[in-house]
Length: 160
Length: 398
Image (cartoon, rainbow over all chains, first blue to last red; front, top):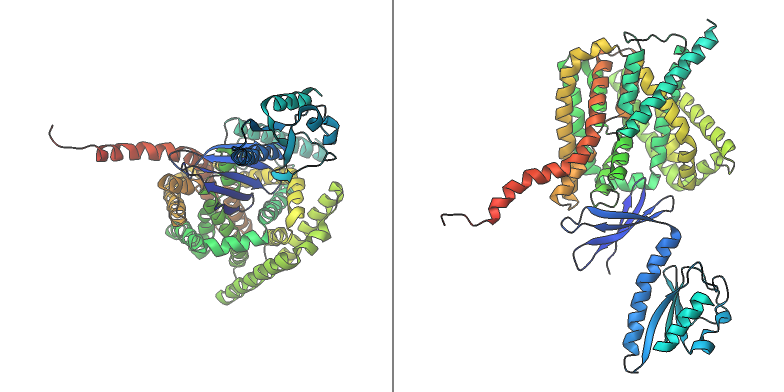
């Protein structure tokens, strides 16, 4: 993927690329540290239709959502041969009882039979996380298991 | 009345009125600079109210205002940005200089103001207002647009051009000979290069010297250093403003960002007083006779900035609407045109009509600039559509 990086003197830096559908998408990183998501209009790729200011947390969460989708798709692809196995993503909300707790405390595998195969955090992947990995709000857990098990796991993460 | 009491009352009234004007400007979404100028015209010589008590303070404040304006201009871009900007956009920068310096200079010659007047008016029409341009780009949500780096790098080039122009202007105003003038150009080029090299290689030392975690200490360090450097520069016959500008360039990185934050309120206050004082010293009765010239100059130099932006954006591979947007974003003139005219008026070697023309010109351009930036796109679309429409239709008798 060819990402254009352009200096914005006095402001910061723009990083963007052209999507297959003909729209430019990317971020503006300000010198003061803010991030803005930018999307160009349909008819003029030079113009921005939207520029959405994001906090560091929001940018990380968006990165997880987009990256997590890709990881989940790849995993589903690999598990296609085995019937009944499904991949699902769980995000840790600020209300989750396990936020800022080691993952082992939730005993997900024991209680639901579901494996957490990766955690997406701030745009990065932690593969095969151990039970002592501390969960943060905004983390995206990639889980593999059967349908019922995943439902149980979701309810554990939400309600404890 | 006690002179101190009178001074305080006048100063308070003026600053309070400036607050009202700035608020009005914010309400209608325009730059406050033209309103400050109008405020100054209203209070000053030949205006409705005469202010005598605050003259001394206002004069010194205006000088500090210029120093702070230039210091902040220097802080705006890092040395690395200046160098890459220069490398990438020098062709557009030179086109900008030629197209926009010449109209002002030619009009000055036509009006019989001589070489010095031409030098001053050229500068007034050349330099875009980076303050207004940056605000317009932000307000219209165009920071992510593809033509924005083109606009910004032209502003960066103008910044560097100011570093050469101001010392030359100061020398010209002091009435030195051609040889001396060339010497000044040589010295200012050498100084600019030296400061850039120092800022690139050893910028952190300069930054360290003024930096402090305590914002009070930091402010005093910065202001002290700026006034010292400006004063020394003035003593060496280089303009005080240039000294402050160079200091701004030399300070870089994180220090520059926090310096901008700390200095902003001070700049706002003193720069506002500077614009008022400029207005105060301009007789409002001298404006109507030059208004026609100001309008003509406004039309011509709006067109020349349009051409500059259009050409630069085209070279960068921007589509047609973006080219118009780039041109329109550059139209506004403001603070630095007034700084140039102010230096000239203070030296007393240019006719007073020049101040009136510069005031009228900046009043027009500071108002027209943001409007042009906002409405150029719908206007261009409206104009292009009827032309494009029939071209796609199959014509001929049915």
